[in-house]
Length: 241
Ligand code: NAP
Image (cartoon, rainbow, N blue to C red; front, top):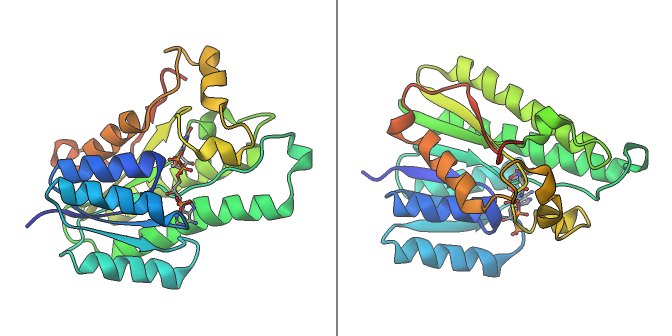
């Protein structure tokens, strides 16, 4: 039987690159997106072109019913073997004192509540040998001063989720995190600085932003048997940041 993996936010960016690499590695994949059906359809076509089964579900990860629907849809592909908690948002870059309650609540809701709801579903449904990867951020250790300290704080919370779940769900399920640095995706549009990744190049020891496929490679490794003794780890993929 092929492994069956759920990826949240698989329509664009790091999630889309992960779906494509999982399909290339022989996984059947169920992924969700929030609104961009066209982007999701393109990724789904690539899964099918790789010879794998796939399902794209419009589901907001902050809604427990929609999360349940996503995992039920994945169940149609076979027994669940993995989850990639990836769907995330930032908010406009700016001083901490200007942060609005609406932006704060949205960042907490998507990046933390959504991760917890999906991890709960996975913890209930994964069998022996299952694996979860939570996509965090180097912001969790750098703090993102002057940009979005609240987002950094929430990403630190997801690292704690990784550590706690790795211990609670062992030995049945491995739980790890990946911490991307500054990756060239559309998320920076939400921060109000679409070219942020390239503008930040001089802050990155490797001298350039990362690509989504470079993060996806780490996620796919952590999900697979090659990482069978790795749990509770948060792996930085950040060009030295
Ligand atoms: P992205 O390009 O903006 O893509 C985000 C994806 O998540 C989209 O498919 C989007 O759906 C989906 N999504 C957003 N909110 C959702 C929700 N509530 N429910 C379901 N799907 C939702 O983002 P990215 O840069 O790939 O980021 C992916 C993850 O990496 C996030 O957790 C982010 O915090 C983290 N990260 C990114 C960077 C970076 O520099 N890019 C750095 C560190 C960490 P639609 O297409 O429908 O909008």
